[in-house]
Length: 123
Length: 109
Image (cartoon, rainbow over all chains, first blue to last red; front, side, top):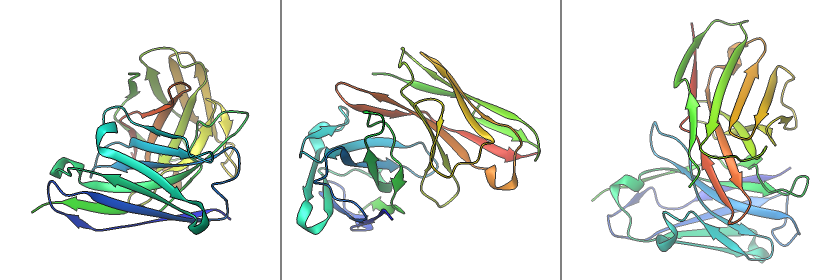
C-alpha cells in the first residue's frame, strides 16, 4: 500500500525559505518509472503543479516558479524534500506530494496523494 | 503554456441524474488528459487517466472521453458521494509539464 505524508512549518515569514518533506512508503524512488511530485492549492482555488523528481534523480519544475524551487530525494530515507525561496503571502495554501507512476509508458497521472500540509505566509 | 478551461464553474444537479463536465485545452494534447475528484478537506483522488481509462477502484458510472482539445467527464447517475469539485489536468511530454483546470463544483440541486 502506497502512502505519502507531508511535513513542515505551518507558518512562514515573508521572504523566508520554506522546506517541506514528503515521507512515503510502499514504493521505492530508486525503482525505474517512478516519480514524486509536489502540487499546491491556495484556499478555495485550483491546484498548481510545482515540481517533480524521477527515480533517476532527474528533476522538472513549473517554469513560472522554477527560480524559487529545489526538489531533492533521499532514497535511503524514502523522502522527497521541496524548498521554495522568498515566500510571499500569495504562496499560502495546502501543499501536497503525490506518487507518479509510469503507466503505458507515460507518467501523466498522480495516483496517490498525501493528505496535504497547510502553509500560511504571514508576518 | 497550455491553458485548461473547465466549464461550467458550478453545476447544480439532482441525485440520480446524468451529468457531463467539460474541459478544453488551448492546444492539442492528444489524450494526455487526467480527471481528479476533490472533496472538502481532502486530497484529490485520481478518477481517469489517458482521457478515458478509469483508475483502480473507480466506479463504472464515471467515464471520460475526448481527444485533442475537447474532453468530457460523464457521471451516469449521480450518487450522494459524487458531489465534489472535479479537476482536469493535462500532461505535456517534453518538457514535462502538468497543468490543472480551475475546477467544476458539483452541487446538490
